Image 1 (cartoon, one colour):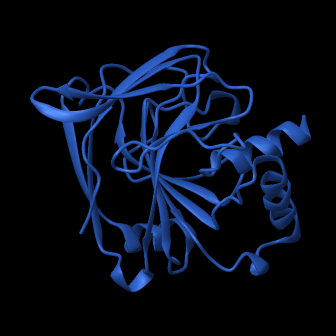
Image 2 (image 1 turned 90 degrees about the horizontal axis):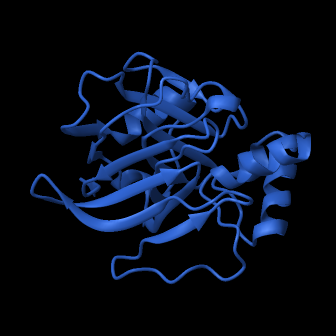
Length: 225
């Protein structure tokens, strides 16, 4: 059980599990699977007149990811949007056994791995050995949670290198586009208590594996300003 929890934590931080990555689309986005998890289906679509990525999770968990590179001095605000039709009442991104979310947008950052605790470095080594890809130094995640108040910062229950900021909560704004604009550097400082390193990847994730349920979302364009 400890081994599985460690492995899942490392892989959740934007790593892939296939030795040969799936082909990227024209914009560089690709599926990222998690070991033993059915894939969430991501496809290009439209929602209420907007171009979007549609995500459909059926007891599944995977990501749709694009590699980027932006140095810390070039980081500023980020804008993103999502449209969610419903939430599972038992989903809770703070509890390991219920850690599902209908909508997440993730940002992965590089950093000085050598200054992390030995246990974390061992996890990174294990994940790299099994997947061929080292987890990022830190992952900042914006989430729509079923109950946590907006503004809550949540440390991932399996890895403190993943931290979440709740930007939508509960059912009040379901079935409409929600547009967000965030200061990425300020939010990283809020979540991790330090300045970020280079941004190396962006991803979206809709998952429902822990609650053995279904989830659906549409994601608009993610823009770095």
